[in-house]
Image 1 (cartoon, rainbow, N blue to C red):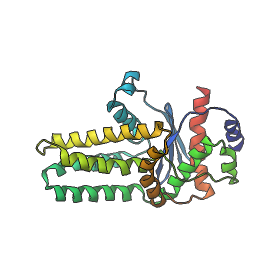
Image 2 (tube, one colour):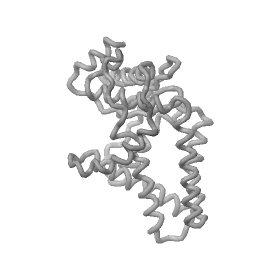
Image 3 (cartoon, one colour):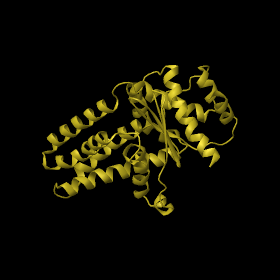
Length: 257
């Protein structure tokens, strides 16, 4: 493994990676492939769906497509999550649609409660440490320090600007503002429209921040980076190696494709 990682470190260009921590392992994704390395030593691999090129250029829609693709390893058959878990995730996402019929204050409290419960459930077990390991492994790839990180000689940051935590921190205020200014009567359809539009607008903001080189744009990431002190934990070497195995799997297939 270390020799393979050292070979990857010597390459000039690598595809951009993302990831997702789970209680039992780490998923790493590129545009074309995903891999899930379990703490039990198992490794699952798959291909990412390829959206039509024109969908990548349509404002608002492109953000939703990108968000959907990032969740693909969770919801597809043979992916990371079990069927019962996928149903629970869908229920948690759909629950806010029913809150449209509640008074604003009650709707806000219910939404916060469901969100908090979902976050606590997602961060159960060893997820916090594996979340930090996921960020460290991706940073190691970007810094070409994969082999050093495998040995424990390097410990890249456990915080990440592209983490979903940062996105979640941005999407909540956008959704609250949209709900307050939404001109139509509360219905399931209107509530669904608010949720979808909130996600799409936040993804556009997210893409703009990623593309910007101005420091003021990075200010949008500060709340999420601060929250990562809660949603990540300093990983042990064995947990970092779990994430590195997934990184190696994805990059090896990318480079051989």
